[in-house]
Length: 164
Image (cartoon, rainbow, N blue to C red):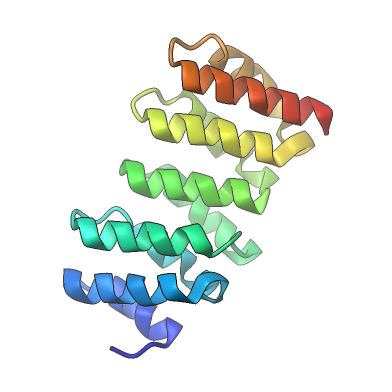
């Protein structure tokens, strides 16, 4: 397999799990240099193949924040029904500090069907600071959740937003 980022992105879109895993592993080894592959990695982390999804997650852990050009795609992916895809899209929107993502993050905060995404949305809103002022009411509601980690994350987000 070629090690170029475009080749890796192409291989992530293949149906062959071995090629996908190899591409994601290569991208994981590149760290922040793999940033151009963020959207493809997020899409592929929803794979049913555990090696593929694990390598995609590994790569996403090291890429840093997405580029401005990737924000709109990540906002769409944040609405995905696949929990891994939505989790990573929300995570990257938080890393980016993308205030334009507040509406989708509030949607995910309210979606109790995916608790890990719900908690991550609270985290991401906290990362946005003042840019997430419009989410304060939703975060306050989340502090009353029976899901204690969510309630705690929402309170932490409120504190960060109000301090900014």
